[in-house]
Image 1 (cartoon, one colour):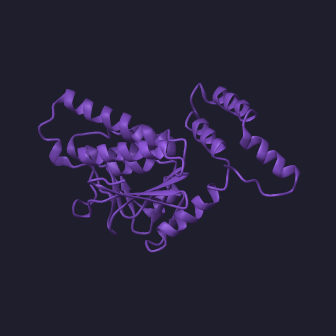
Image 2: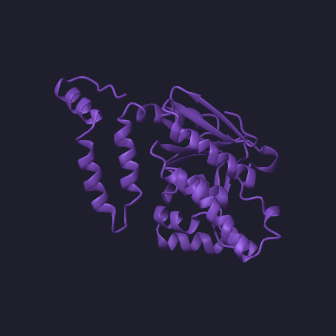
Length: 256
């Protein structure tokens, strides 16, 4: 597929989506939001895609934030609509994707960029990565789910501090507080991410989708019931029959 603001490729079942505005530090604007929405529609619908890497072009930024030039003329209604469209069309679509989506954060992930990384199922960071929600510096707050996902990842107190101070956390601090899973060199970031997804891609696609659905409900009143329902549904699938059969036959399973 071709996009104005993204690079999109698929190899060995892994789709790599690269936000390609390096001259603007890969900042989010309306075109990027539209392209990301369309790209993830392709992810959902393309059976050849088993998992996704989301990253940024260049060596400085994953996404350095939103394009602030689009904000100046907006009123309260426009601002709410901007947040709602972004959340519904991109951020929630990524979070709820039934295929694993991993952020390879290759530099600044600030504001909407930090929110974009957090909407992915987990994150790897290069050593030069920096994370932050600096919206209070502009008289704003995070609008693409940042207050919610940051709290889920690092806890209420730390999320409050980060959102209130606009502090930028480096890669090692992000690792220590649970914002990222792994830190690696910039040069090996994509390779390390691919290696993890190559392992994940050997697992049952059906089961992976159900893990995502259940973990996304963790901490809610629906969490345990969702797990019970999804667990039960596994028993009617060919993936479960293949996985259990392979275990009993002492061989590796082969999932469709």
